[in-house]
Image (cartoon, rainbow, N blue to C red; front, side):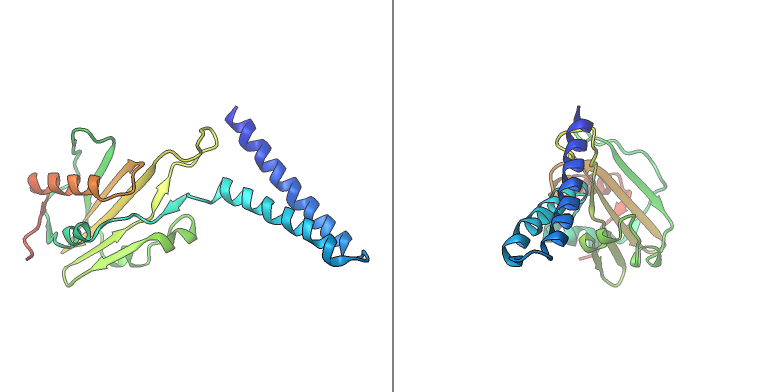
Length: 195
């Protein structure tokens, strides 16, 4: 049913765009060009807006982390663990992995959709580099609304180790990331000894 709904919207938008372009071309040969051009231009804009809302709007967004959380990320000065599964009560699937990535691997990170780069954030000081990746949606045509959750990912690189934290959540806030960082600190996966 959802495919039918989104399919009808997509086909309707495409027909509106094509008919608007055709009407615009025909109206250029008419006597009263100003009046006859307004309707096709309006139809074209409406069709493009529907396509944009269906296929592009909301797929990526900026992760709204407060200043304290950003400072918390930069305060990590060492990563002490190998890849492991970490379970935090009350939270859904969380992926946490430790690797040996370098800052160069993420300085100019390429996303599947190139425009996603405008939503990323980079933090750094003398010892730590942090890449806060754009929130990536689970947009799908088999659900209404089309987007129900976003994947939040942050990569911390310090010394010769990297830590990648990734989880799905609807809310756009710092709360869950702070819980994860506190848990990792408690488990001594990370050390925060900077002042």
